[in-house]
Length: 103
Image (tube, rainbow, N blue to C red; front, side):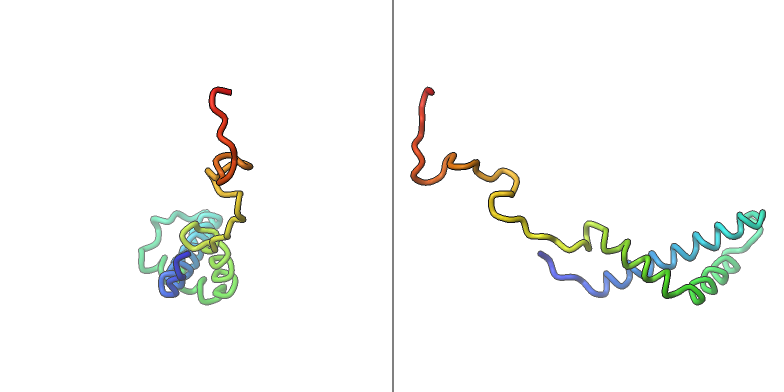
């Protein structure tokens, strides 16, 4: 199992948290009956930053859960012997088992 790259993990969490803030702002603008095109990028980013600042804990907590689900960050579980894909079947081909030909 590869060790967790802490910096990469933190960047993934923050990127996802900021993305969630952006989508929340977008949803609110659309719910208010406005169009996204009525706002400049700077205005949208300011709204996103304000939303992120006021909802930081919940956004980061949600992002943590989601990032842990990503295959590149999910903790790898060890499989028990005999349950691995392609493992030998009971006695087949093991040392000391008789080989039966033509039967």
